[in-house]
Amino acid sequence: MIWNAESIDNLATNGQLALIFTPSQDWATCVTAKALRSAPPPLRRKGWDEVVEADIVSESGHLVMQTLSASKVRFPNLARRGPGIYRLRLYTRPGEDLILIYPAKRAK
Image (cartoon, rainbow, N blue to C red):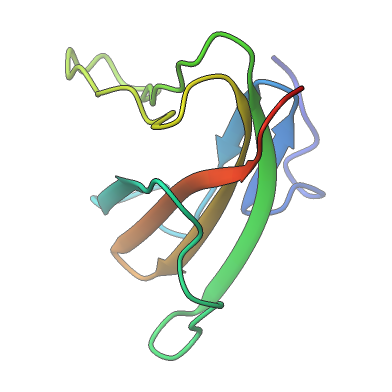
C-alpha cells in the first residue's frame, strides 16, 4: 500500500480497512482498543491531544487489529454486533492511544 504521508490524517478508513497513524510512531506506545455494544457518551477531549472518528464496514462480522511489526499477538474480534457499519473513535496523546469501536448502524 502506498500513500502520501504528508497528507494523511491520524485515522483513515476506506470500506473494511482502517489505518491509524499517531505522532508517536517512532517510540513505544500503549494502545488500548475497546469494543462496545452501543455508542459511548459524546466526545470527551479533555486530556487528549486529538480525537477523531470515522466509519468502517464489517461485512463478515469480524474486525481485527493487526500491527505492522512482526509481533505474533492475536487480537479478539472487535465487531461486537456482527456484520454492519461501525464507528472508530481514536483518542491520542504522547505514548498512549485509545480506540473505541461501536456499532454506527446495522447493515440492511
